Length: 524
Image (cartoon, rainbow, N blue to C red; front, side, top):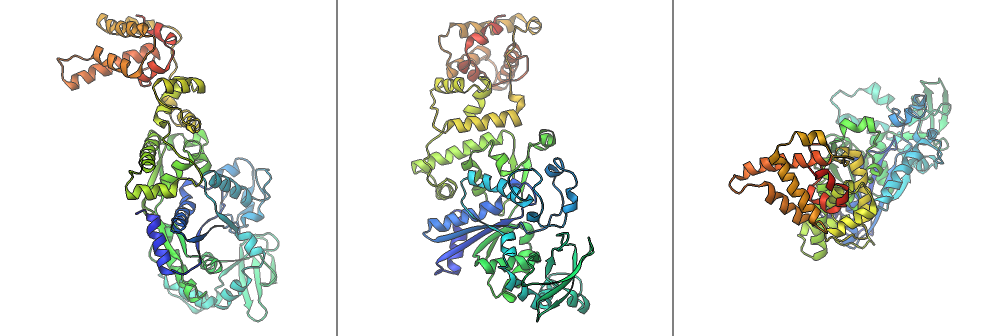
Protein backbone atom coordinates (compact mmCIF):
# COMPACT_ATOMS: atom_id res chain seq x y z
CA UNK A 1 0.00 0.00 0.00
CA UNK A 2 1.28 3.46 -0.89
CA UNK A 3 1.66 6.00 1.92
CA UNK A 4 -0.96 8.28 0.32
CA UNK A 5 -3.52 5.47 0.62
CA UNK A 6 -2.71 4.98 4.31
CA UNK A 7 -3.23 8.68 4.95
CA UNK A 8 -6.43 8.71 2.89
CA UNK A 9 -7.80 5.79 4.91
CA UNK A 10 -6.92 7.63 8.13
CA UNK A 11 -8.73 10.77 6.95
CA UNK A 12 -11.84 8.81 5.97
CA UNK A 13 -11.85 6.80 9.20
CA UNK A 14 -11.86 9.98 11.30
CA UNK A 15 -14.81 11.51 9.46
CA UNK A 16 -16.41 8.77 7.31
CA UNK A 17 -19.54 10.68 6.33
CA UNK A 18 -18.02 13.96 5.24
CA UNK A 19 -19.26 15.00 1.82
CA UNK A 20 -16.13 16.85 0.65
CA UNK A 21 -12.70 16.33 2.21
CA UNK A 22 -10.36 19.34 2.32
CA UNK A 23 -6.66 18.69 1.74
CA UNK A 24 -4.33 21.67 2.13
CA UNK A 25 -0.81 22.83 1.52
CA UNK A 26 0.76 26.23 1.71
CA UNK A 27 3.79 28.46 1.49
CA UNK A 28 5.02 32.04 1.32
CA UNK A 29 6.22 33.63 -1.96
CA UNK A 30 9.37 34.94 -0.28
CA UNK A 31 11.29 34.33 -3.51
CA UNK A 32 11.63 31.61 -6.15
CA UNK A 33 10.19 28.57 -4.41
CA UNK A 34 12.88 25.93 -4.00
CA UNK A 35 12.25 22.37 -5.22
CA UNK A 36 13.06 21.37 -1.64
CA UNK A 37 9.83 23.07 -0.54
CA UNK A 38 7.76 21.35 -3.22
CA UNK A 39 6.65 18.67 -0.75
CA UNK A 40 4.21 21.29 0.59
CA UNK A 41 2.44 20.89 -2.75
CA UNK A 42 3.22 17.30 -3.77
CA UNK A 43 2.42 15.51 -0.53
CA UNK A 44 -1.15 16.82 -0.13
CA UNK A 45 -1.70 16.39 -3.87
CA UNK A 46 -0.98 12.65 -3.67
CA UNK A 47 -3.26 12.32 -0.64
CA UNK A 48 -5.99 14.14 -2.57
CA UNK A 49 -5.48 11.76 -5.52
CA UNK A 50 -5.68 8.75 -3.21
CA UNK A 51 -8.96 10.03 -1.78
CA UNK A 52 -10.33 10.55 -5.29
CA UNK A 53 -9.30 7.04 -6.32
CA UNK A 54 -11.35 5.81 -3.35
CA UNK A 55 -14.36 7.59 -4.80
CA UNK A 56 -14.33 10.60 -2.44
CA UNK A 57 -14.94 14.22 -3.31
CA UNK A 58 -11.93 16.39 -2.52
CA UNK A 59 -11.17 20.09 -2.34
CA UNK A 60 -7.39 20.51 -2.73
CA UNK A 61 -6.24 23.99 -1.69
CA UNK A 62 -2.88 25.71 -1.51
CA UNK A 63 -2.64 28.78 0.70
CA UNK A 64 -0.34 31.47 -0.73
CA UNK A 65 0.75 33.36 2.36
CA UNK A 66 1.40 36.53 0.37
CA UNK A 67 0.25 38.65 3.32
CA UNK A 68 3.33 37.50 5.22
CA UNK A 69 6.25 39.92 5.72
CA UNK A 70 9.45 40.16 3.68
CA UNK A 71 12.29 39.00 5.91
CA UNK A 72 15.28 39.28 3.59
CA UNK A 73 15.95 40.13 -0.05
CA UNK A 74 16.77 37.07 -2.22
CA UNK A 75 19.95 37.10 -4.30
CA UNK A 76 18.08 37.03 -7.63
CA UNK A 77 16.20 40.17 -6.60
CA UNK A 78 19.24 42.08 -5.31
CA UNK A 79 21.04 41.29 -8.59
CA UNK A 80 18.28 43.03 -10.54
CA UNK A 81 17.41 46.01 -8.36
CA UNK A 82 19.07 47.86 -5.49
CA UNK A 83 17.48 49.05 -2.29
CA UNK A 84 14.80 46.41 -1.73
CA UNK A 85 15.95 46.13 1.89
CA UNK A 86 13.68 49.13 2.50
CA UNK A 87 10.69 46.79 2.04
CA UNK A 88 11.70 44.37 4.81
CA UNK A 89 8.69 44.11 7.11
CA UNK A 90 6.17 44.80 4.33
CA UNK A 91 3.71 42.14 3.08
CA UNK A 92 4.75 40.53 -0.20
CA UNK A 93 1.73 41.72 -2.14
CA UNK A 94 2.27 45.34 -1.10
CA UNK A 95 5.84 45.36 -2.47
CA UNK A 96 6.49 46.39 -6.11
CA UNK A 97 7.41 43.69 -8.62
CA UNK A 98 11.22 44.03 -8.97
CA UNK A 99 11.34 42.46 -12.44
CA UNK A 100 9.10 44.82 -14.39
CA UNK A 101 6.82 42.06 -15.68
CA UNK A 102 3.02 42.17 -15.81
CA UNK A 103 2.53 40.89 -12.25
CA UNK A 104 1.55 43.76 -9.98
CA UNK A 105 3.58 42.85 -6.91
CA UNK A 106 6.58 40.97 -5.57
CA UNK A 107 4.28 38.27 -4.21
CA UNK A 108 2.33 37.87 -7.44
CA UNK A 109 5.53 37.49 -9.48
CA UNK A 110 6.89 34.60 -7.42
CA UNK A 111 3.46 33.01 -7.08
CA UNK A 112 3.00 32.95 -10.86
CA UNK A 113 6.49 31.47 -11.32
CA UNK A 114 5.53 28.65 -8.95
CA UNK A 115 1.99 28.18 -10.29
CA UNK A 116 3.21 27.86 -13.88
CA UNK A 117 5.63 25.08 -12.89
CA UNK A 118 2.95 23.30 -10.83
CA UNK A 119 0.64 23.35 -13.87
CA UNK A 120 3.43 21.97 -16.07
CA UNK A 121 3.87 19.11 -13.59
CA UNK A 122 0.20 18.31 -14.10
CA UNK A 123 -1.16 19.34 -10.71
CA UNK A 124 -4.53 21.06 -10.45
CA UNK A 125 -5.06 23.00 -7.23
CA UNK A 126 -7.19 25.84 -5.88
CA UNK A 127 -4.96 28.73 -4.83
CA UNK A 128 -6.00 30.99 -1.97
CA UNK A 129 -4.32 34.39 -1.65
CA UNK A 130 -4.10 35.35 2.01
CA UNK A 131 -3.77 39.00 0.96
CA UNK A 132 -7.21 38.82 -0.64
CA UNK A 133 -8.69 36.99 2.33
CA UNK A 134 -7.31 39.41 4.92
CA UNK A 135 -7.91 42.56 2.87
CA UNK A 136 -11.49 41.52 2.11
CA UNK A 137 -12.28 41.49 5.81
CA UNK A 138 -13.12 37.79 5.78
CA UNK A 139 -11.04 37.11 8.88
CA UNK A 140 -12.26 40.08 10.95
CA UNK A 141 -14.45 37.88 13.21
CA UNK A 142 -11.51 35.54 13.87
CA UNK A 143 -9.16 38.47 14.59
CA UNK A 144 -11.65 39.99 17.04
CA UNK A 145 -12.16 36.57 18.66
CA UNK A 146 -8.38 36.09 18.99
CA UNK A 147 -7.98 39.52 20.58
CA UNK A 148 -10.73 38.72 23.05
CA UNK A 149 -8.99 35.41 23.85
CA UNK A 150 -5.49 36.88 23.78
CA UNK A 151 -4.66 35.98 27.40
CA UNK A 152 -5.82 32.40 26.92
CA UNK A 153 -3.69 32.24 23.75
CA UNK A 154 -0.71 33.55 25.74
CA UNK A 155 -1.22 30.78 28.29
CA UNK A 156 -1.26 28.13 25.54
CA UNK A 157 1.92 29.50 23.97
CA UNK A 158 3.69 29.53 27.34
CA UNK A 159 2.91 25.84 27.88
CA UNK A 160 5.43 25.08 25.18
CA UNK A 161 8.17 27.46 26.38
CA UNK A 162 10.81 26.95 29.01
CA UNK A 163 10.67 30.43 30.48
CA UNK A 164 8.22 31.38 33.20
CA UNK A 165 5.05 33.25 32.27
CA UNK A 166 4.48 36.58 33.97
CA UNK A 167 1.45 38.81 34.39
CA UNK A 168 3.06 41.85 32.74
CA UNK A 169 3.88 40.00 29.52
CA UNK A 170 0.46 38.35 29.56
CA UNK A 171 -1.23 41.73 29.83
CA UNK A 172 0.82 43.18 26.96
CA UNK A 173 0.43 40.17 24.63
CA UNK A 174 -1.52 40.67 21.38
CA UNK A 175 -1.76 37.83 18.82
CA UNK A 176 -1.59 40.18 15.83
CA UNK A 177 0.79 42.14 13.65
CA UNK A 178 -0.39 45.55 12.44
CA UNK A 179 1.01 46.79 9.14
CA UNK A 180 1.61 50.52 9.46
CA UNK A 181 -0.78 52.71 7.45
CA UNK A 182 2.13 54.98 6.53
CA UNK A 183 5.06 52.68 5.65
CA UNK A 184 3.22 49.32 5.41
CA UNK A 185 5.75 47.62 7.71
CA UNK A 186 4.89 45.37 10.61
CA UNK A 187 7.55 46.98 12.81
CA UNK A 188 4.78 48.12 15.10
CA UNK A 189 3.96 47.79 18.77
CA UNK A 190 0.33 47.23 19.75
CA UNK A 191 -0.34 49.37 22.78
CA UNK A 192 -4.00 48.66 23.48
CA UNK A 193 -7.20 47.04 22.28
CA UNK A 194 -10.73 48.04 23.26
CA UNK A 195 -13.00 45.00 23.21
CA UNK A 196 -16.17 47.10 23.07
CA UNK A 197 -15.19 49.33 20.14
CA UNK A 198 -12.70 46.93 18.46
CA UNK A 199 -10.17 49.78 18.29
CA UNK A 200 -6.42 48.97 18.18
CA UNK A 201 -3.78 51.57 19.03
CA UNK A 202 -0.28 51.01 17.68
CA UNK A 203 3.02 52.84 17.16
CA UNK A 204 5.40 52.15 14.26
CA UNK A 205 9.00 51.78 15.34
CA UNK A 206 10.19 52.49 11.80
CA UNK A 207 8.41 55.68 10.77
CA UNK A 208 6.95 56.75 14.14
CA UNK A 209 3.32 56.58 13.04
CA UNK A 210 0.98 56.48 16.05
CA UNK A 211 -2.72 55.90 15.51
CA UNK A 212 -5.85 54.09 16.56
CA UNK A 213 -7.66 51.99 13.96
CA UNK A 214 -10.80 49.88 13.85
CA UNK A 215 -10.33 46.14 13.40
CA UNK A 216 -13.69 46.15 11.58
CA UNK A 217 -12.42 48.58 8.95
CA UNK A 218 -8.61 48.48 8.93
CA UNK A 219 -7.69 45.32 7.04
CA UNK A 220 -3.90 45.49 7.35
CA UNK A 221 -3.89 43.40 10.51
CA UNK A 222 -2.57 39.82 10.43
CA UNK A 223 -2.77 37.08 13.04
CA UNK A 224 0.55 35.74 14.31
CA UNK A 225 1.67 32.48 12.67
CA UNK A 226 0.63 29.94 15.32
CA UNK A 227 -2.78 31.57 15.53
CA UNK A 228 -3.13 32.26 11.80
CA UNK A 229 -2.52 28.60 10.89
CA UNK A 230 -5.27 27.06 13.06
CA UNK A 231 -7.59 29.93 12.16
CA UNK A 232 -7.27 28.93 8.50
CA UNK A 233 -7.87 25.25 9.35
CA UNK A 234 -11.18 26.27 10.88
CA UNK A 235 -12.05 28.73 8.12
CA UNK A 236 -11.57 26.14 5.34
CA UNK A 237 -12.55 23.00 7.27
CA UNK A 238 -9.18 21.34 6.61
CA UNK A 239 -8.96 17.54 7.07
CA UNK A 240 -5.28 17.08 6.20
CA UNK A 241 -2.21 19.27 5.90
CA UNK A 242 1.49 18.35 5.95
CA UNK A 243 4.45 20.33 7.20
CA UNK A 244 8.22 20.16 7.52
CA UNK A 245 9.91 18.25 10.33
CA UNK A 246 10.45 21.53 12.19
CA UNK A 247 6.67 21.85 12.55
CA UNK A 248 6.32 18.16 13.43
CA UNK A 249 8.69 18.06 16.42
CA UNK A 250 7.11 17.67 19.89
CA UNK A 251 6.15 21.14 21.06
CA UNK A 252 6.55 22.50 17.53
CA UNK A 253 4.15 24.60 15.49
CA UNK A 254 1.67 21.80 14.88
CA UNK A 255 1.33 20.91 18.56
CA UNK A 256 0.94 24.56 19.58
CA UNK A 257 -1.48 25.33 16.77
CA UNK A 258 -3.50 22.19 17.54
CA UNK A 259 -4.15 23.34 21.10
CA UNK A 260 -5.10 26.81 19.84
CA UNK A 261 -7.37 25.24 17.22
CA UNK A 262 -9.25 23.21 19.84
CA UNK A 263 -9.32 25.68 22.71
CA UNK A 264 -9.68 29.00 20.87
CA UNK A 265 -11.41 28.19 17.59
CA UNK A 266 -13.28 25.05 18.66
CA UNK A 267 -11.98 23.08 15.67
CA UNK A 268 -10.39 19.64 15.77
CA UNK A 269 -7.01 20.09 14.02
CA UNK A 270 -6.45 18.26 10.74
CA UNK A 271 -4.48 15.06 10.41
CA UNK A 272 -0.88 16.12 10.06
CA UNK A 273 2.08 14.52 8.33
CA UNK A 274 5.62 15.77 8.89
CA UNK A 275 8.04 15.40 6.02
CA UNK A 276 11.81 15.15 5.73
CA UNK A 277 14.04 17.68 4.02
CA UNK A 278 15.35 17.39 0.49
CA UNK A 279 19.05 17.88 -0.12
CA UNK A 280 21.17 18.29 -3.23
CA UNK A 281 24.20 16.44 -4.54
CA UNK A 282 26.37 16.92 -7.60
CA UNK A 283 25.50 20.59 -8.12
CA UNK A 284 27.20 22.63 -5.38
CA UNK A 285 30.46 23.12 -7.23
CA UNK A 286 28.79 24.66 -10.26
CA UNK A 287 25.68 26.26 -8.80
CA UNK A 288 27.06 29.75 -8.30
CA UNK A 289 28.88 29.95 -11.61
CA UNK A 290 26.01 28.65 -13.71
CA UNK A 291 23.29 30.71 -12.09
CA UNK A 292 21.05 27.64 -11.93
CA UNK A 293 18.02 28.14 -9.72
CA UNK A 294 16.83 24.83 -8.29
CA UNK A 295 13.11 25.50 -8.55
CA UNK A 296 10.36 23.19 -9.85
CA UNK A 297 10.70 25.00 -13.19
CA UNK A 298 14.46 24.38 -13.12
CA UNK A 299 14.03 20.66 -12.43
CA UNK A 300 11.51 20.43 -15.30
CA UNK A 301 14.39 21.24 -17.64
CA UNK A 302 15.85 17.75 -17.18
CA UNK A 303 13.02 15.67 -15.70
CA UNK A 304 9.68 15.02 -17.38
CA UNK A 305 6.62 15.88 -15.23
CA UNK A 306 5.98 12.19 -14.53
CA UNK A 307 9.51 11.65 -13.21
CA UNK A 308 9.16 14.60 -10.81
CA UNK A 309 5.81 13.28 -9.57
CA UNK A 310 7.26 9.77 -9.24
CA UNK A 311 10.28 11.04 -7.26
CA UNK A 312 8.07 12.84 -4.75
CA UNK A 313 5.66 9.91 -4.51
CA UNK A 314 8.13 7.03 -4.18
CA UNK A 315 9.62 8.06 -0.82
CA UNK A 316 7.83 7.90 2.50
CA UNK A 317 7.04 11.45 3.70
CA UNK A 318 9.41 11.19 6.67
CA UNK A 319 12.32 10.16 4.44
CA UNK A 320 14.97 12.76 3.71
CA UNK A 321 16.60 12.32 0.33
CA UNK A 322 18.79 14.10 -2.18
CA UNK A 323 18.13 15.48 -5.61
CA UNK A 324 21.15 14.43 -7.65
CA UNK A 325 22.61 16.20 -10.65
CA UNK A 326 24.76 13.40 -12.03
CA UNK A 327 24.22 9.95 -13.54
CA UNK A 328 21.57 9.35 -10.87
CA UNK A 329 19.23 11.27 -13.19
CA UNK A 330 19.72 8.58 -15.84
CA UNK A 331 19.15 5.88 -13.20
CA UNK A 332 15.90 7.54 -12.15
CA UNK A 333 14.59 7.40 -15.71
CA UNK A 334 15.55 3.72 -15.94
CA UNK A 335 13.83 2.90 -12.63
CA UNK A 336 10.73 4.81 -13.72
CA UNK A 337 10.62 2.99 -17.06
CA UNK A 338 10.97 -0.38 -15.35
CA UNK A 339 8.10 0.39 -12.98
CA UNK A 340 5.95 1.81 -15.78
CA UNK A 341 6.48 -1.31 -17.90
CA UNK A 342 5.32 -3.54 -15.05
CA UNK A 343 2.37 -1.22 -14.38
CA UNK A 344 1.25 -1.23 -18.03
CA UNK A 345 1.67 -4.99 -18.32
CA UNK A 346 -0.22 -5.68 -15.10
CA UNK A 347 2.76 -7.36 -13.41
CA UNK A 348 3.52 -4.60 -10.88
CA UNK A 349 3.44 -5.35 -7.15
CA UNK A 350 0.87 -3.57 -4.98
CA UNK A 351 3.16 -0.70 -4.01
CA UNK A 352 4.31 -0.03 -7.59
CA UNK A 353 0.73 -0.16 -8.86
CA UNK A 354 -0.52 2.34 -6.27
CA UNK A 355 2.61 4.49 -6.81
CA UNK A 356 1.90 4.81 -10.55
CA UNK A 357 -1.81 5.27 -9.90
CA UNK A 358 -1.04 8.57 -8.18
CA UNK A 359 2.04 9.75 -10.07
CA UNK A 360 0.86 9.37 -13.67
CA UNK A 361 -0.98 12.36 -15.09
CA UNK A 362 -4.69 11.87 -15.62
CA UNK A 363 -5.82 11.87 -19.25
CA UNK A 364 -2.37 11.07 -20.67
CA UNK A 365 -1.74 7.90 -22.65
CA UNK A 366 1.38 5.98 -21.61
CA UNK A 367 3.56 3.39 -23.28
CA UNK A 368 7.07 2.04 -22.89
CA UNK A 369 9.33 4.93 -23.88
CA UNK A 370 12.66 5.21 -25.69
CA UNK A 371 15.30 4.78 -23.01
CA UNK A 372 16.59 8.07 -21.61
CA UNK A 373 19.95 6.36 -21.10
CA UNK A 374 20.14 5.54 -24.81
CA UNK A 375 19.19 9.09 -25.78
CA UNK A 376 21.69 10.59 -23.32
CA UNK A 377 24.44 8.30 -24.62
CA UNK A 378 23.79 8.94 -28.30
CA UNK A 379 22.88 12.64 -28.26
CA UNK A 380 26.43 13.98 -27.70
CA UNK A 381 27.79 11.42 -30.16
CA UNK A 382 25.68 12.92 -32.95
CA UNK A 383 26.35 16.45 -31.69
CA UNK A 384 22.72 16.75 -30.52
CA UNK A 385 21.41 16.62 -34.08
CA UNK A 386 17.79 15.46 -33.78
CA UNK A 387 17.48 13.70 -37.13
CA UNK A 388 20.82 11.95 -36.71
CA UNK A 389 19.79 10.85 -33.24
CA UNK A 390 16.51 9.37 -34.48
CA UNK A 391 18.41 7.47 -37.20
CA UNK A 392 20.96 6.24 -34.65
CA UNK A 393 18.26 4.97 -32.30
CA UNK A 394 16.48 3.14 -35.11
CA UNK A 395 19.83 1.75 -36.28
CA UNK A 396 20.05 0.05 -32.90
CA UNK A 397 16.69 -1.60 -33.63
CA UNK A 398 14.95 0.61 -31.05
CA UNK A 399 11.75 2.63 -31.43
CA UNK A 400 11.63 6.43 -31.35
CA UNK A 401 8.43 6.78 -29.35
CA UNK A 402 6.06 9.79 -29.52
CA UNK A 403 7.43 11.42 -26.35
CA UNK A 404 11.08 10.70 -27.15
CA UNK A 405 11.43 14.29 -28.40
CA UNK A 406 10.65 15.49 -24.88
CA UNK A 407 13.31 13.18 -23.44
CA UNK A 408 15.79 14.40 -26.06
CA UNK A 409 15.17 17.99 -24.92
CA UNK A 410 15.69 17.00 -21.27
CA UNK A 411 18.84 14.99 -22.06
CA UNK A 412 20.32 17.87 -24.07
CA UNK A 413 19.88 20.26 -21.15
CA UNK A 414 21.10 17.70 -18.60
CA UNK A 415 24.33 16.87 -20.42
CA UNK A 416 25.22 20.41 -21.44
CA UNK A 417 24.46 21.81 -17.99
CA UNK A 418 25.53 19.12 -15.56
CA UNK A 419 27.84 16.80 -17.51
CA UNK A 420 29.83 18.91 -19.99
CA UNK A 421 32.69 16.44 -19.47
CA UNK A 422 30.68 14.03 -21.63
CA UNK A 423 30.85 16.32 -24.62
CA UNK A 424 33.49 14.76 -26.86
CA UNK A 425 34.56 16.26 -30.17
CA UNK A 426 36.26 14.23 -32.89
CA UNK A 427 39.76 15.35 -33.80
CA UNK A 428 40.04 17.12 -37.14
CA UNK A 429 43.23 15.30 -38.09
CA UNK A 430 45.14 12.20 -37.02
CA UNK A 431 46.81 12.41 -33.62
CA UNK A 432 50.30 11.90 -35.08
CA UNK A 433 52.13 12.69 -31.85
CA UNK A 434 50.14 10.10 -29.96
CA UNK A 435 50.46 7.54 -32.78
CA UNK A 436 54.27 7.87 -32.60
CA UNK A 437 54.14 6.83 -28.94
CA UNK A 438 52.41 3.52 -29.69
CA UNK A 439 54.23 0.21 -29.98
CA UNK A 440 53.86 -1.92 -33.09
CA UNK A 441 51.73 -4.36 -31.13
CA UNK A 442 49.40 -1.50 -30.15
CA UNK A 443 49.27 -0.24 -33.74
CA UNK A 444 48.43 -3.73 -34.96
CA UNK A 445 45.36 -3.84 -32.68
CA UNK A 446 44.26 -0.43 -33.97
CA UNK A 447 44.72 -1.54 -37.58
CA UNK A 448 42.53 -4.60 -36.98
CA UNK A 449 39.75 -2.36 -35.65
CA UNK A 450 40.22 0.06 -38.57
CA UNK A 451 40.06 -2.71 -41.17
CA UNK A 452 36.99 -4.29 -39.53
CA UNK A 453 35.09 -1.00 -39.47
CA UNK A 454 36.14 -0.17 -43.04
CA UNK A 455 34.81 -3.52 -44.27
CA UNK A 456 31.33 -3.07 -42.79
CA UNK A 457 28.52 -1.75 -44.95
CA UNK A 458 26.66 -0.96 -41.74
CA UNK A 459 28.32 -1.01 -38.35
CA UNK A 460 26.21 -2.86 -35.76
CA UNK A 461 26.65 -1.97 -32.10
CA UNK A 462 26.68 -5.50 -30.65
CA UNK A 463 28.86 -6.88 -33.43
CA UNK A 464 31.54 -4.17 -33.14
CA UNK A 465 31.46 -4.53 -29.36
CA UNK A 466 32.11 -8.27 -29.67
CA UNK A 467 34.87 -7.67 -32.22
CA UNK A 468 36.71 -5.25 -29.93
CA UNK A 469 36.65 -7.64 -26.98
CA UNK A 470 37.65 -10.61 -29.14
CA UNK A 471 40.56 -8.59 -30.51
CA UNK A 472 42.02 -7.22 -27.27
CA UNK A 473 41.27 -10.10 -24.87
CA UNK A 474 43.71 -12.97 -24.34
CA UNK A 475 41.99 -16.28 -23.48
CA UNK A 476 45.07 -17.38 -21.55
CA UNK A 477 44.85 -14.48 -19.08
CA UNK A 478 42.60 -13.97 -16.06
CA UNK A 479 39.51 -11.79 -16.14
CA UNK A 480 41.30 -9.15 -14.08
CA UNK A 481 44.28 -9.15 -16.45
CA UNK A 482 42.02 -8.84 -19.49
CA UNK A 483 40.18 -5.93 -17.90
CA UNK A 484 43.48 -4.09 -17.57
CA UNK A 485 44.19 -4.75 -21.27
CA UNK A 486 40.71 -3.50 -22.21
CA UNK A 487 41.25 -0.28 -20.27
CA UNK A 488 44.59 0.22 -22.00
CA UNK A 489 43.20 -0.13 -25.52
CA UNK A 490 40.05 1.86 -24.90
CA UNK A 491 42.32 4.67 -23.74
CA UNK A 492 44.29 4.33 -26.99
CA UNK A 493 41.12 4.39 -29.12
CA UNK A 494 39.82 7.48 -27.30
CA UNK A 495 43.08 9.36 -27.74
CA UNK A 496 43.11 8.59 -31.46
CA UNK A 497 39.51 9.70 -31.88
CA UNK A 498 39.10 12.54 -29.36
CA UNK A 499 42.53 13.30 -27.94
CA UNK A 500 41.30 12.30 -24.45
CA UNK A 501 41.71 9.31 -22.14
CA UNK A 502 37.94 8.75 -21.94
CA UNK A 503 34.94 9.05 -24.21
CA UNK A 504 31.49 7.75 -25.12
CA UNK A 505 30.61 4.08 -25.25
CA UNK A 506 32.58 3.04 -28.31
CA UNK A 507 30.21 0.42 -29.68
CA UNK A 508 27.40 3.00 -29.66
CA UNK A 509 29.66 5.65 -31.15
CA UNK A 510 30.80 3.43 -34.02
CA UNK A 511 27.25 2.29 -34.77
CA UNK A 512 25.58 5.70 -34.49
CA UNK A 513 28.13 7.82 -36.32
CA UNK A 514 28.93 7.93 -40.01
CA UNK A 515 32.18 5.97 -40.20
CA UNK A 516 33.54 8.36 -42.83
CA UNK A 517 33.88 10.96 -40.06
CA UNK A 518 36.23 8.85 -37.93
CA UNK A 519 37.73 5.97 -39.97
CA UNK A 520 40.82 7.88 -41.11
CA UNK A 521 41.69 8.77 -37.50
CA UNK A 522 42.21 5.03 -36.87
CA UNK A 523 44.41 4.57 -39.94
CA UNK A 524 47.79 4.14 -38.23
